[in-house]
Amino acid sequence: MKLSTISAVILGSLLLSSPASAGWFDDLTKKEEAPQVATQTQNNDLVGTVMSQLGLNQTQAEGGLGSLLSLAKTTLGGDSFGPIAEAIPGIDGLLSAAPQLDSDSGMSGLLSKAGDLGSSLQGGAQVYDSFEKLGISKELAKPMVDIVKGYLDANAGAGTTDLLMQGLGALL
Image (cartoon, rainbow, N blue to C red; front, side, top):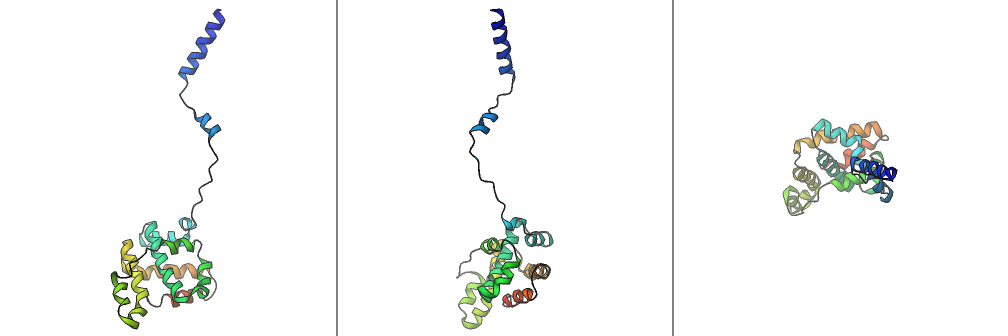
């Protein structure tokens, strides 16, 4: 009888002295979750370069790049934009990071009402309106273009930088 009493006391004290944790039980009952996949734009060298050289946060860098690339894509069309798209990992994420603009507001809204001359300048105005919405100075457009040019020079085929410059003609 004494042995069972001593055993009960020892077992009870062990249970009471151990930390209350059901972590092992959680591990047994937890469903396997799909691993979180980091978006390519988060790891993109181009975004990191823009952030570090221009002092922008990730949202600003991605949105600013997306605005520039959207202008190039619209100007060039899908086929001509292809080499640029192939050279920049996560380009779809960048394009979707460009802020949506109200077509009646800002500089681009005014130019949309100015006829043919206004429509030729509207693309550049949309980039500036996007920059303003993101809290980026429009003076950073040229340095950002230069960073993209340098990136394409290092990572893309011949002529890709020329395509970018052609696509950004309304801005420059």
